[in-house]
Length: 254
Length: 357
Image (cartoon, rainbow over all chains, first blue to last red; front, side, top):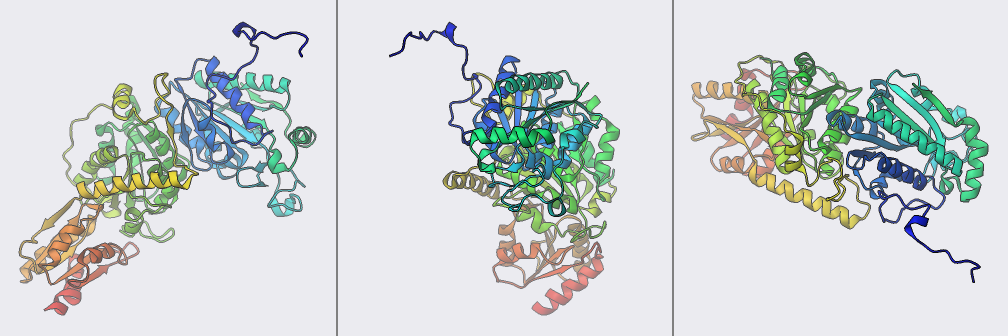
């Protein structure tokens, strides 16, 4: 028996599901960062009053089904091509808010060309880039961002630079391009980071609507299934291993 | 005007919303002309030089998803790069126009004209069960006309349309009759025409629109495929286009499209002067293929020569239509070499006339 009663009234609510998040059961694994990031994207769109103006581009990978969870118009792009698809949508509907949502395999491996050139053209879009250092959907293979020594399905003895090359920081590369106005690296593994990440997303969306050029928000994220760890251990592993190599914070802001 | 330039003129006059391309010989004049015309200052048409054909076809995919009239043009190796995107466009039931000014292959091949992408244009090209409406112009006028026709058919059936031209027609200069320009559709008109599927921003009163070609449930994916197939059957029933020349009394039939049909029209004249009753059937739509009229003519003629600038691709469709009733042979040149009417006439005599007397 509770010592005091909680009366549930609308004015007492301090937290709720964003209106734009659908009732569909998410297919993401428990502990995956996608759910939190989806929530932030939905909140930012809602708070900016852009629900009727926003078109999302979903990738190939775990987040291909982002279109099932955020209640806006979506187009699903071929693997890696989201930035090209978004380019056309934004050019043809300049008044709309257009963003892509891509994983590291999609953006930094197969889609490197499209991503870099969209940056270079200064397309007025937002690129949301989820870096969990692994291919989640296909069962945990090496990603371009996989850390040295990290074990994956295709680096069973750990990533060896002689065999597999080096992990690379595509966001840092993109920051050199003149068409890019804002590049930041965020995470959602603590409440503080969630709040910072939301601010970063909002800024990116505002940049796109103001026509300032391309903004990219990278999320260093967990894939506990791919990493074969519990959600809690994944957060710890990310802090200890990912964040030293992929440090959080703004990389470019003009 | 030149064939390639006329594509640009037609696109602007038709009210095309966007062109996305990448330079490749022998069709680079399409984008060059558009950039010179600056239609973004007049009709508001968007023109983007992409970083690759892979990017340009995906831009077309994005634009088509918005219900806009969007197109690209390229030549054979570039079309190969686009095939993934074309498959996605077909799989997501989107309308668009793709122009292929063919050159010789395989590989980097040659920059000279060819018709060796017939299979790619008519049998798919990319992965999965899909078709493009494939239009084969045989003149600069038709290159102009088929931009509008291609868009009309693409939007009527929500399928991608391809204009399968070749380097001869693309580089040829001829007189062209242009239509009056028509304005691009307004957002309201797009909403009316494509409002039940296109990405226009989710309004409160409707469900969200999702353009995708993904269905993990095989039974749901089969339904998607069945719908596509039903559309293809409808196109086959309604949209076959072809032209016949001197077939009424013909003893021998030439089947040829595009620049080959121009050459074969001359062959018909030469053969008739020499006393042979030769006719020509020119498929205008390569898919849907005019199999029925060819089958009907097979009941009249003694033999058929399928004439293409390749090693023999369309001949498979001709033979399927004829179903073994009369001999069907192929004559072609490859690698960018174009036959003269005299060469085709000799081949006709050797392969068909002399063997079926």
